[in-house]
Image (cartoon, rainbow, N blue to C red; front, side, top):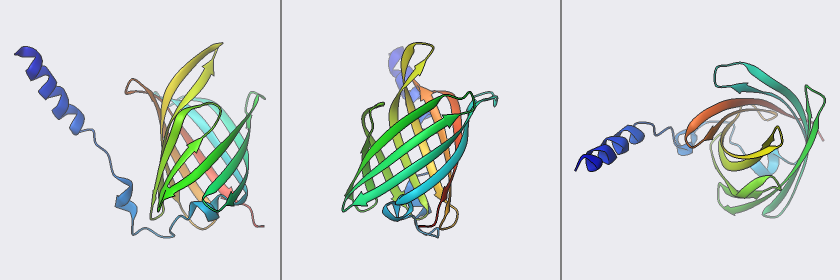
Length: 176
């Protein structure tokens, strides 16, 4: 009996944690067209912060992106503040209006994304190497188109529902 009360209480607690749905931004302009924004050269700058706010790493990213019909490639080259480099190549597929799936070598399974208005919510599980150990961490990315060339991304990184830190990223499209 006691465990049933515990389950009910936990359900009520977790339902209070539900956030904003991406559809909340449906009327926001300019509308994000993923195939248009991520087509050509995009530059980005960002940082990772621990959950206490301490900035641990800063980075720059060069993204070369292209689309052929429903499929897109985002080739990302990272340079971190400690001099290390990383490359991630996303293969994206539009599966329905405003809905996408993506794959990359260091992503577990399919990443899923949904666009509405000026917002994109992107969720994935990243295999993250730290000191020789690989961790699987959940990313919940929210991207907001500010104007036709500028997008802001806030990500929460968590494990077992516990926040580990946040990533803040600023994107800027370069004219063709």
